[in-house]
Length: 175
Ligand SMILES: C[S@@+](CC[C@H](N)C(=O)[O-])C[C@H]1O[C@@H](n2cnc3c(N)ncnc32)[C@H](O)[C@@H]1O
Image (cartoon, rainbow, N blue to C red; front, top):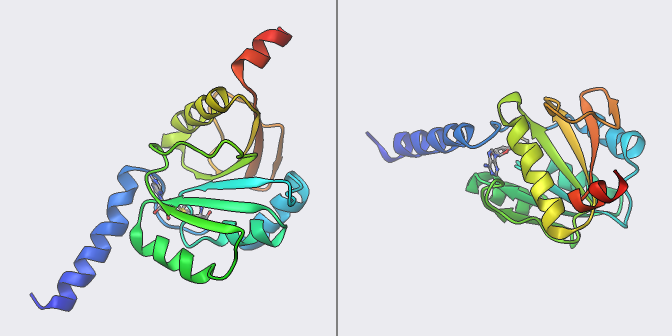
């Protein structure tokens, strides 16, 4: 096999492998993300948004457009490079290589965005609750696609749903 066939095979395997760990690469529809950041949750310069599986970084750039600091975690190194290239020169955006299930989210996170698939919905819910309990502060979650299994959204808009996660200690205190 010639080198270019090996290259194509390697890229194919790289994009295929991520399916084991999360959603495949399909970017969110930018019009709907803009609407979600304007109407579902009014994203502002006070927010720190984390995109779990940030792909080419479109969500990060739309979040930065509204003044938010935006951090993406992406497993596929080709997409990390593409995201960094497309977001170059924007000090509000950081794209980090890594597995979203294994990273600790920054303490200052106010909102998480996840292009969710049904298979990972429970795992996502657990991950966000653990983060919130560990950091001791509430976090909003926007899912695009599959809804969470055991938590009700605060609001939905088209395929986006908004959830509020609070530290369990706070929830117990109110009960
Ligand atoms: C459906 S795309 C969404 C991209 C972007 N968030 C958007 O909404 O446009 C899912 C992305 O998650 C990445 N991904 C899948 N599993 C992952 C994991 N365990 N950790 C980090 N990224 C992952 C894929 O490579 C892909 O780029």
